[in-house]
Every structure is written in C-alpha cells, then in structure tokens.
Length: 308
Image (tube, rainbow, N blue to C red):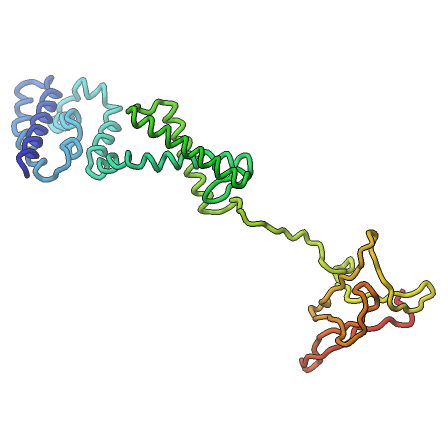
C-alpha cells in the first residue's frame, strides 16, 4: 500500500469512526464507551481485508451505529427512527456506486455520448417511419422517400450531434425535459432494435411480388387446365384454322402446357406452322404406360359430334 493510499485510508477510517460516534451521541457515556472501545481497530481490520470503501462493506455510519445499538439491546436513536424507511434504498445505492466495477461503468458512460447522439436521431426517424409509413428500411430509415429519406436521416443525425457537442462545450447538465425526452428516445431505440432483430414488418428496398391466385393459362371453372380448343360450326361440324380473339382484339393463345395430372403438353414436332390462336392445335402429351415407360400420346382431335 503506497503512502498516499494509506493516508487516504486512515482518513476514511477516522471519518467513519467519528460519524459512528456522532450517531451514538445520545447513548449514556458508560454504554457508549463500551460499544466504541475498539471501533478504530475493527475498522482498520475491515479496511485491510478489502480495498472497497467502508460504506460498501459496512453500510453508512448511521446504519453501523444502529447495528451496534441493536447488538447491545439499546433502542434506535432519533436519527435512525426518522430515516428508517429511506435509509435502506439510499444505502444500497451508495454501496453499489462505491463498488469498483460500478464506478468504472459510471466513468466510462460519458465516453458513449457521441454514439448516443447518433442513436437517438436514428430512433426518432425510425419511429416516424414506422408510425406514418408502416415500416422501415434497414439500416437507414427512408420515410418512404427513397434517396431523399437518406438525406433527412443524415440531417437529423447531424442536428442531434450538434446539440450534444454544444451542451458538452457549455458544461450544461440536462434538464428534466431533456432527461424525459432522452428516456423516450432510448425506449424507441430499444423497440426499433428488437423489431429489426426480428425483421417482422420491416420494409425492404427489394420489390415484393404477390400471388393473386389468378391462373396464367386457360382453365375451366374447376381449375382443370385447357390444353386445346376444338371449334365446331353451328351445325355440329368440326372446324379447323379458327382464329380466336378476346373483346380487345388480342389473340387467345394461352393454352395450358400441363395436364391436370402434371403431364407435359407440347406442339407436335413437324406440324404445319399456324398462328398461336388458330384452333384446333396439333398437340401431344408426354405420359407413361402401364410399365412406367415414357410415351407420347396425341391430344384427341375433334370428334364428329361435340359433347353436349
């Protein structure tokens, strides 16, 4: 132990002992002398065992004096009775703040202020993005404005950092309104980070496609694909080379290329070339026989009499 440290430790012991004696000033002299006979020696032993402050090891001087009263069967002093309800919480806070790791964290927290200045601006813009746009992009919120949103976010970060630097340069302590605002922004940042980790409801810059359930080819009402069209005249005679168009003059040529069983349907190789909307088409189905061997079956041609 260095001389400077030893001097500080001796002063701490003396101050603590004096505060204990003051807390026991109402105790009769004979009892007080009995209780405090070896107080300094005991405090020195406690201080030698650990570098933690005495208040962290033993509690406040008033609390230590109250323990001495209780051990001797004496009633609590007037000061202890007045502060009994609040002493426990304040004592615990004092012990925690006196603990080495807690002190190191408190000393390190000011170094994180620049990061907080950026984070609070990001949290504010993200909250606006979620509330008014319905989602947010990661990592930079855009407010649904594309590149303009990046500029808005950058401006918010620059403004927040400027406020932080000004407050630090002026040495101003944050007021109540600033503390409440920062606490709210901290909560928003936590919610945003949790939401981004889950990625639920987060907007993406990539296009999103939705399946509306409408078929891409001709099908019947029950969903059976239409692989060919067999036209007939009004007298029931099969027709060939019939061109079909819709109400807008667009050719109807989107026959299904798969049967209801998932078999491939294609145009017969070498068949005469005709428009895609000319019917009937010469088509064939790739299927399998009873032995599982692949075979090609022509799509049935129009019967002499159509099915009613």
